[in-house]
Length: 286
Ligand code: AMP
Image (cartoon, rainbow, N blue to C red; front, side, top):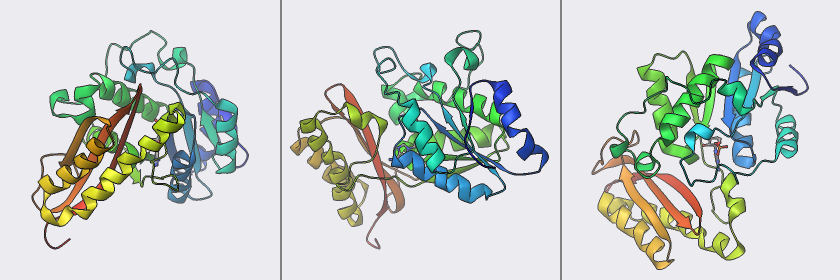
């Protein structure tokens, strides 16, 4: 396909995808909430690699009210649509699907939603009740509308990636889920649309998250408790209000004593909440 098409409705999306579907091309979806940065752009590149030049890359831009809790940043979430289109065009996206809320939820909040499982065992779910229900529901709807062969998600939102894989497996959705590595600023801060909320002093303090991950990796040979303690020490030293510092198995089901694992952190800087994570390899052979 060539040149960027913008679809605002399901009907426009279907029309935009018609040729590629009838021609047998594959479709890749990159779901986003806009305010695009290089992290999103990397997903678009992965999506293109997955479907090749004859396929179609669809980026959705939708700030999904269902995944925001009361008092969260739905109203102030950054919206930079023109710049998003420029970035999408630049990265070879074929279709930007940018529905309004009433297109996605014509009858208001849906009656049937996707249950993410036990919130009390979830890192983000415990702190943001209802968040993953909102995420999984909108992703399921996007899968139904776009009918992608492949969908690309960032490891930046690691627990989200795991939940989406679980949904696809548990509900037998015919979509191949691809995870893409975290893209960082030169100084280590994981790129995020929310970084633009940060005041200069908070931006500096936010570096403690990636420094904490680095400290955790340095301690990986000494096991999960040492990893968590090393990461936690950095956050405490920096005076950050943390939500969690956790070491878990790669599928976030329990904590192994050795082998591959994930270190995940979440902290607040004023009213801005940031998350980050990294792979670790626990045990003496690391
Ligand atoms: P968002 O617009 O924040 O909902 O993110 C849309 C997608 O981009 C999600 O799959 C995120 O995990 C991914 N993403 C956001 N930031 C980054 C990053 N720094 N590196 C890689 N992927 C990212």
